[in-house]
Length: 225
Image: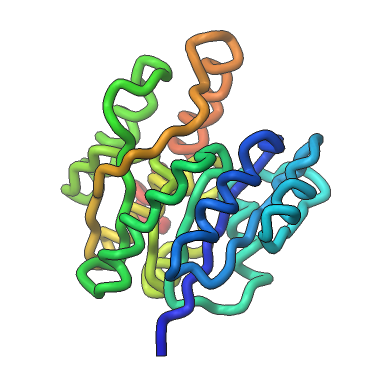
């Protein structure tokens, strides 16, 4: 019997891209269901996801990425493998088959996608901070510590739940997985996503991201998680 694979797509105000993302993930043969977690969107994200064939779990208000994913996991039936993806990947989400293959083949428990070099963004401060924290706490040196594009076995979820809140979810998941002795791998994939840029909005986003990562790291550094 083939393992059950469920894709979880975190989304907030992604009406222009979520449909293409859902369609691309749904075209991956191994994926049984695509679930979009609409974290309090103010646009037509939920409708676009439904039209593209996704199951939609819609929050009344925004609670942050990690908490939205955790609440979705509490409501959904169990799966053998979970595919996590951001809603802004568009058609390039089809490449996520590349993170599923090593997990389904039993070579690793957690496979993380890295983006091609040279994509626009900030100055890399938050990324370096997360990478150094992961290395300091586990000895593992990630190349893509912030990537939300990852495939994970049920064992990974058991080791990492409850998921860290907000944008700290990926950094915390990697730390928890390594500490649990589970097998990790990073693979480069031809993915594209929306750049936050170097404007005020972009810096505000990275500020929230950095704070969430810090809040995820502290209890793990203190041995509270």
